[in-house]
Length: 160
Image (cartoon, one colour):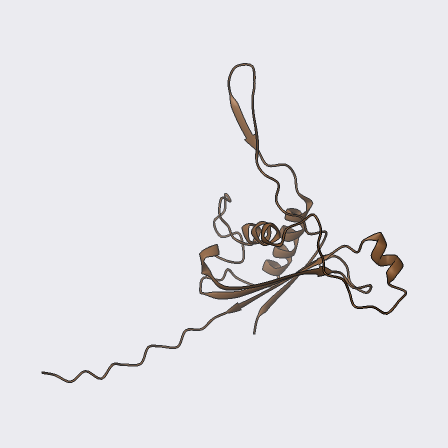
């Protein structure tokens, strides 16, 4: 049974690190603040409070990003039409990268933080970006399903 984590908030890709030097030649680097990271951390804290531990086995990861509806879609929602594809500022691959970075403990002070021990445990990834329906809030549904490997069958080797 997959672990489902529903994150509410506006999905946003992680901004690039910014660097600058002061007049003494000291270079500093920082990441601009990102509310999406805080939304993910809040959802992970809630999951950890329910007793969900860190996953340390191969997994399939399914991500469904629900992007905020545009004003144009709000006007068109009165007519029964199929939803247009969600093309906008946020690239799907950058959304995946930002979300995956937050659910793994890489670079954190506490290595037990995060739902996945390492992002190299993701062996199958399915991602979708769409507009949120009228009855939904923007966010992301993260489904993590462990992939159980069958034990290898013993090989029949005849002695020589």
